[in-house]
Amino acid sequence: MRISTTIFLTDETIRPVRLARELEQRGFAGLYLPEHTHIPASRDTPAPMGEPLPREYGRTLDPFVALGQAAAVTERLTLGTGITLVAQHDPIGLAKQVATLDFLSGGRFTLGVGFGWNVEEAADHGVEWSSRRALARDRIALMRALWADEPTAYEGAFGSVRASHAHPKPAKGAPRILVGGGAGPTLFAHAAEYADGWLPIGGRGLTDALPELRRVWTEAGREGEPVVVPYGVRPSAGKLAHFQELGIDEVVVQLPAAGEGEVLRALDAYAEYL
Image: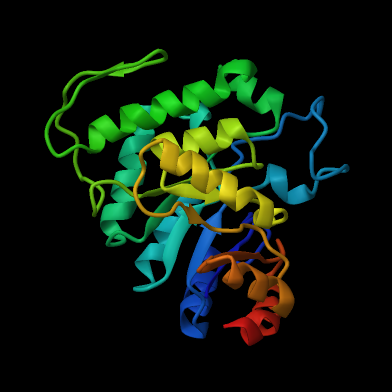
């Protein structure tokens, strides 16, 4: 089983270059980074992970810039977002960022797609909360048009793009795309429609959820198996063995949003699972 990592990198934590080098040297498979452009100080939306909201949420580095640094100093480490708030981006600009990072890293990038929890953050980006999932779906389709080999137009419910020359292209036509969020019919339908699989936070309930995801996948006419990557996991030998029995071959473990010393100690502790 491949053991990847995630961390809230901030202006107060270990730096991306140092972390990426340590991960690759120690044999970890990948690095996934979360995204928040800002956290409105009003704090009207309660945090689903509990209050008070951890300090790192309002201090996150831009994941694409940080992952670009990580890509430049590694050769094998995979790179991903966990997750990108696609609805909060201009899709033409995001398509360029994703394609550039995937191209420069030699196809090592995974685009984790998410829908957010902070209503005020989304509103500042002009996102209507009730339509954010449909908006993200539309923007993924627009980005795929820009990644196509030939100039391809797209006309969607929320945006459009003319047939255009748009380079670089992702290394393999498109990056791997995983939809993040809790199990449910809407999420599974979206994963089967426009993604390569699912990024479930924590990994609880997979024994019951995986058969349903596979059913939706098959009914949508998709071949093979959906990729499932449990994300933000607090690992134990029993938990990882359970995931392996379910056919999962990559798990993303949670690192502390901390300075170099504490993060490296966490990597030492996780070394037994490599």
